[in-house]
Length: 74
Image: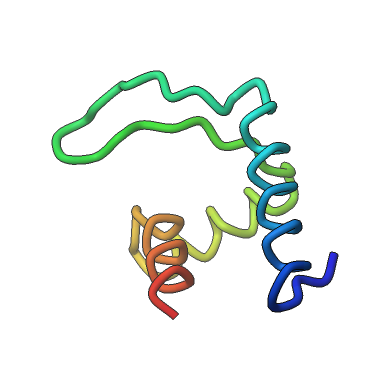
């Protein structure tokens, strides 16, 4: 899907929000661990194996948190 500016972008944003709100996991469970909220993430086993390998090499247990933070901050 290409996201454009203007009216089309607003329609795309509305469609995305509708899809997300209709998803079964769209409601938050409210499980708080310290200052963070626990979520469930579904990921392909092959990708998870790569993430685990990279995290072990980097010695960084919070690899996914860091990747998400860096992407959002970009």
